[in-house]
Image (cartoon, rainbow, N blue to C red; front, top):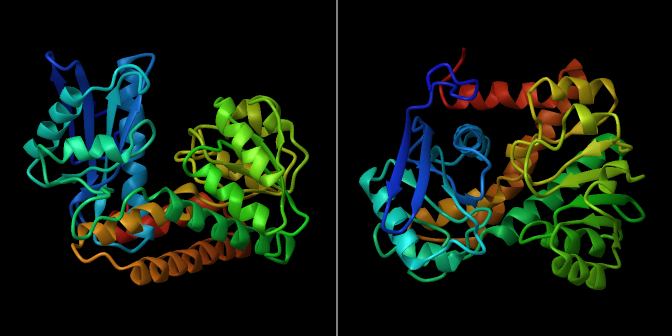
Length: 346
């Protein structure tokens, strides 16, 4: 664990197993320097336990940075459950996960992420109070995906302003990878702004629905990397900027909501050399955790959320400007700011 390439001085990595329900889960807590660690729970059918651990560590690390850049009083953590989200869910499994979260005594606050929905979190809530993203309760905020998507859309405009000299997206072609709960909303915003969309997803039903509402052209998951577009917007899983895809991108910017888009940090420099402006994922996609933070506070205010998202966009713009002025990779600039905000200056 301690020499794992993704460890990065995590405060705690907790593994849970419940034989009765079949629960196999990891809760990774990267930092509580700014407050209790907060981050969603992902359910995914990993190939190996090592892949599961690596995902938990990287996602938790990313949440520390995301929450710091959003300037909210939360640390970074993440939970992953090993299983098929379509066939392995059960009330007993989520109750077992809720007991696991409760055992951490408030050091970690969970919410929904890939493969998990509000209904699942409601079951988790039966066993622990340390859960957010609910649609019931005094400060319930519900699914944070629409707020995440709004922030990504605004972030795409901020990125376009630097890449093209204007944030006007009318007539721009944007290739969107992933049209699920976040990507679908992003597509709606982009279409309303006059953008031409090229979309892909493994969910054919979601693709057809988004295409019918936005006029988007559908391509296969592999073809999206070769799309002739102005901006590539990844809104599915991570590691999509890698040695294989780097040479295929035909865009001037990458801006989307997927976590951990760079397979390794060095990809940021390689994107810069190719003239592709990259919006660091944990900055542009912070709208959802801002929404969750408002719920955690106990007094949800949409006005506060909207103001925080606007401030986050100013932060993103500052990162992009600093990188362009100094010829640094944008992820290096963002990482430096985030680590300062969580008290890590190494």
